[in-house]
Image (tube, rainbow, N blue to C red; front, side):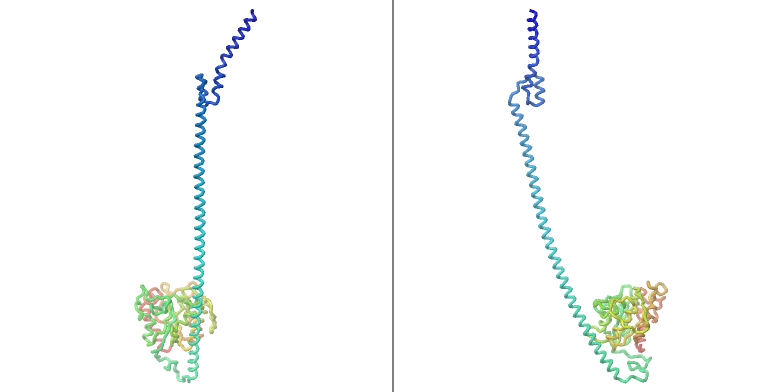
Length: 408
């Protein structure tokens, strides 16, 4: 009886235990696959009877979200592909435009090079023609000069102290009807009276010379009765420079020498040379002189002695029958004393060399430095310490006129 009771009690305990655990196990089994929140709610309420449609709707919603995300990604990919295609097309268009520009630039450069080459060839041809014409003119002048010199040699020389004009030495000489050419710098210029392309100083706003008749050289012409052939004066020009260049402003250049005969090729009876001031201002070295005439060659010259001697050498070769006068330079002041250039030279040094070279070549000198334009009076007789004003030009003209009429 006792064992039977124990079996009944044990059975009841097991049944109670199973009864307690059976609902939990069932809820868990029915709630598998539900969202976490739904599982918690099911455990709390004990509602384990979830319908099958909820699971289907949740799966469909998730599929819709995935489809939407895939559609957005596909749209983004398509947009990126479109941008990439547009960029590639723009790059191709830029490359085509760049190639077209480079081709146009190359064609333009080729055309410019061709034009420059043609222009250079034309300039070279014109230069050769001009040089040939100048050489021919010079040859004709030299031939005529040689003929005239020969005729003069055949005549009987004077035995009574007569000079070349037939007037007694020291007696005023008539220059009426003779032609004169001037080889000078700014002091001898005037607008409209010098060759085309030459630089000019007069008239100047700060100078009271306002008419060509007030210049020193025109007064000389009027005083002597001569006629101007060519005023070959170039403002700021020096004796030195390139003696060969066809556009050279150097007094020793062949261009400046040949220009004295003008377009007609006429040989002037008288040549007045006033050059050297700008060599002084530019501190061109004075150079050395042996005291005897020396043959000089054409090149770029930066030595006053060499340049001045080459200039006289050319003048005598091209114009052997012309009476050539070398003129010394008026003073240049620095306050109340003579100016000194960077080499320590003064105008007096250059004037001394002019006299030495002219003497060696048998050329007369007109010492204009002694015309009365004293260094302490340059403020009165010049506009800037260098260029004569009306009063200064009159003093120069009177001095030069006297020297010419007295036979040099």
